[in-house]
Length: 341
Ligand code: DP6
Image (cartoon, rainbow, N blue to C red):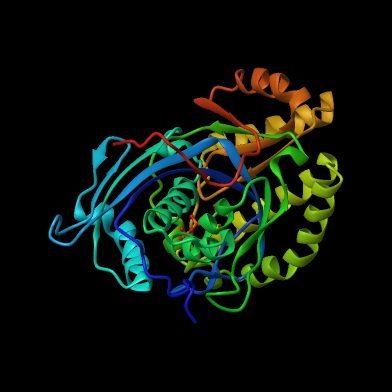
């Protein structure tokens, strides 16, 4: 089944889209079908307002360009670095029945090595801009399915606020939907950056290793109940209920990573320093703040507005924290009037 309806593109146009990254509360780790990024389990995330990618994409009529020209954060990507994006553009070209090339300029407002997922916001912005610029009026659900092919977590960035990606059965049904809009709950994601180094093993490679861990089946079996808890905690805006569940799933995912073959070990000494400090702040001072960790060493600390200053002040006392980035829940991808070229 095809994701796109066979709507003929109107003309090679241009569009600019801003999409937020997202932080997962229940993680996507491991695929059942790598060709379509069909995950092992549903995941739930919060789209970020203050960590986003802006992408201007222009389709170039035949003869104007032989290759796609992609510039990311001021650097023109060579063929090797552009390959994953070009493969995604090839999908859109195939579905739309065109062979036009593109010029793309894309800008993240956060450092690539900050531990914030640039693939989620990047593929959400690229997919949306590419389809808009073709005049294809696709629903957010269809764009979510298409973005998933580029990067699994990007499927969630097609929606604002609190979002669930249903595993589904196939390329059409594995899509995200909104649970609650951003205004539902002013939850903050405070990213404590302990290392800006590029990770040695990408998420793309890591998803293929999950099944080799003896702990993977246990984690996947625990997810349905965790999803129920997370949905209920978000509905009630109850951080004391949400926090322990998201910490446990992040730890379970990292246990799977550490025990896969080969072992993936993303943590640094600073990762543990912050976990221990957070435990102490909660136990001794009653600070309401909980962590999650993606495929890297940096901590994402979730707290409410009243505790933002307390969290930031405490993080500033830790030697391993290099940088702190704060974000609120954000909107679905936005079409902008100001192109980047
Ligand atoms: C640990 O979406 O980056 O952040 O589909 O290969 O692009 P690809 O993987 P990606 O994986 C995200 C993994 C995670 C957890 C999550 O965001 O759910």
